[in-house]
Length: 232
Image (cartoon, rainbow, N blue to C red; front, side, top):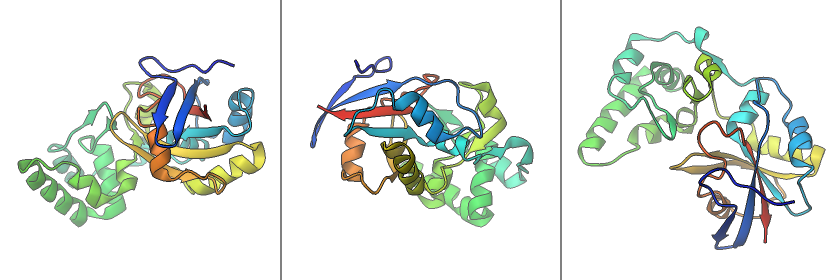
């Protein structure tokens, strides 16, 4: 089987632990409530060999877990409307807290006082050229919220997608049911994070981030939520 990459991405990558091939596995458009184990069996197992590692996009796991926030259920406050005016709405990494629904999510998670103070600190940080202060203060749950953004897939404008629940447990479940060693990643063209990995995965988070440092799954409408990784 020949590995294939998304447009403008490379199949192979050199890292401190060796050279790896990455295969971007195309799937149907995965919707809320599907079974990630069944998806691995259908799309990954026909290509998988012993020793391969599977990287799964975090959004897909949350969708399978029914872990979404319907836009119609979000009560947008005056504070969210006010603060969102001063923030970035979105960039190539995804939606930002300039979107009033994501700002409201930050308030719901952290409380209004903390989010207001984070916004003030972020404003001062911009004056001295320091970015990321707001998300450092409000946490990864807010940073990792997806959805509420219809430009790539219109249906994603109807709900938010938080980070998956128990990502380590999900990885261990996939291994138990399919035999495929798995990691769950939150990656874009700027940052890569390992949200969870199975207990049998030996590489460190830093070593795993090296392997996906170019975001092989892509950022747009590729529908390649599974990246099969094979050491050469």
